[in-house]
Length: 307
Image 1 (cartoon, helix red, strand yellow):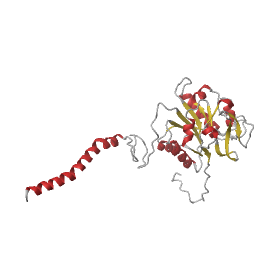
Image 2 (tube, helix red, strand yellow):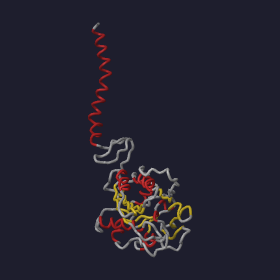
Image 3 (cartoon, helix red, strand yellow):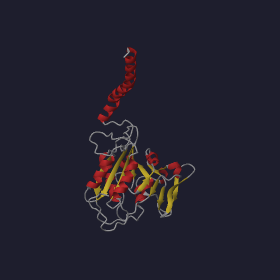
Image 4 (cartoon, one colour):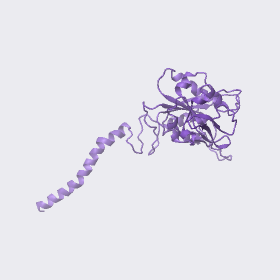
């Protein structure tokens, strides 16, 4: 075979093999170390820190990186056992995963913390604290004792002299939340407020805001004379204000239904202190959307399958 033919064949092989070789070298030098270190390279995949118990593949389930420049949001969520509990906690956790600097305080209504809720929280990848309390006496307003346990944890964890900024929100597990809501509340100075959809027998309840941007009353149907006629999902409180008012808790006894919020806020602020959010309370960013318990006939439930 003439030498020119050999040279031609060598050139073809070189042109074919060289790009593949360079690609492999680049992979080993850049991408492979990231995978080995469990770092996030910005694409969907099973890139989790070592020790993370999450085993889902090809789904992004990590919260945003923690930032020292952002105020933290502490969401206190009472929960109790019922058939749709896992569905609603999963629904809520998938929303909270998108929020930076968020710590979820989940308080069970139970004698002891359940393994079921612990496993669910572990698998979310969120920063969380798991607590429990069981109020044996029947109350008109569910969840007040659990919210008080969450407030106690905050006061035990942070000093009143702690300078770190933060905000406390009472987020129930059966609501639907817009991601915008968390940005609205993050820089609360005292107490921020906004409308809540599908509550109190109307399409929405809302603070009334005047032309100067100050709250002067309430657009509500139920118990209009309440000083703070607001739903639990409709306000957030600055962490330092919570820490500086150790007596500010939810009253468990002798409080009419729907009055827990107003009694709580009376110990913290006056009407003029309220900070309207959601474009001067003209937008609904949170809704009461309870999941109804399905009717399951006997014989169709497998107790070994967790739902």
